[in-house]
Length: 437
Ligand code: PMP
Image (cartoon, rainbow, N blue to C red):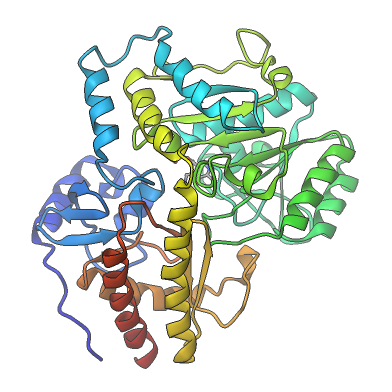
C-alpha cells in the first residue's frame, strides 16, 4: 500500500537504552516513551523553525511544538536573543526582578479577564494553586472537573469518573488517597443535567468548577459557547468559582485565550506553555480582590524558588511581544484552517471515516464518522490503532506528531505554506494507507 521503510532509529535506540538505566521507562514524562505508537522514542537533537532533527539525523516538520509552547516555532531568533542577553547577567536570584513585572504588564494590559497574576514554574503548579485559591476564598472543599480534561498531575486532579451521572472521582494514579479523590466530583463534558445534579447533591459544598474551555488533552472536545456560558451561570448561582484552565488555550486561541475567544469571564484563569516561550513557566490570574487571598497578602500559601525566573521571564517577554502584534492570530489561524480544511476535503472525497477538528492553530485527527466529538466517552479507543499506523507512516515521510492519538497538533508561525503543502501531501498518502489496509 505504498508503505515506506522505517526511518533509522539506531542512535535513538542506543540513547533510549542508556536512558532506561536512569529514568523510569527511560523518560521524564510518560507520553514521550512512544508506548501508543510504533518503535523506539525519537531522541531529539535540535529544532529550528518548524523543523526537528533527531539523533539519527532524521528531519521532521514538527506539529507537536513541545506540546504547545512553541507558537513561534523552535529557536525563534527574538526569543533566543532575549534569553541569551539575560543569561549573561545570571540565572536566578530568588529575589524580585523588573522582568517579572514587565511580563506581567504585557499580559495584564492585553487581557480584560484578569487583574493580577502570579507566576509558577509549570502548568501543574498553576492549576494546583488556583484550586487552593478557590478553596481558600470560598471556604469550601469539593471541586468539580470533567472527564476528558487534564489539569496536570496534582493529587486532586488525577481523578477520573466512576460510573453514574454524578460520581465521586476514582484516582487515575496509584498513590493518591481515596479521601483526596472524594473531594473531586467528575462529570461528563457537554452535559448540563449532570452538572445541575452535582450542584444539587453537594449544595454549598462546591468551591469551583474547573474546565479546559478548549479541551485539548483527550482529543479536541470542542464545547459550545452556550455550554460554557451555562457553566458561568451555574457557578454564579451556587457561589462557586469558575476556573478556566488555559494552559493550552491561553495565548493560543487568542492573546486573551479562550476567555477572550468566547468572551466569558471566569473567576480564575491558569496559564502555562506559551507564556514561557519554551522555558518552564506557569501562571494563574484573577481579579485583584480574589488574588488578595494569596500569600503574603492573604492566607492562601503558594511559593516557588524558581518562580518568575529571569531567564524564563525573558523568553516569555520576547514571545508574547510577538503575539501582541496586530494581525498575529488572524494570519496563523487562517493558515491553519486552510491546512486542516484541505485535509478534511481530501478525506471526505475518498469517503474515509476521518475528521479533522480544529480551533485557531490547534487540530486533532480523529478516525470517526461523527461530525462532532464533545465528550471523552465519544472517542472509540479502537480508532487508536489507525492513528498508530498513521503516526508511523508520517514519521517515515518526515512529519512529526505527538506520539498518541489522543493528543492534538499545533501549527506555528514558522510553518510556511510550502511546509504545510508538503505535510498535506504526506498526510493524504498516509490516509490512503490507513484506509486501504
Ligand atoms: N493543564 C492543562 C490544560 C494542560 O494541558 C497541562 C499540560 N499538558 C497542564 C495543565 C499541566 O501543565 P505542566 O505539564 O506544565 O505541568
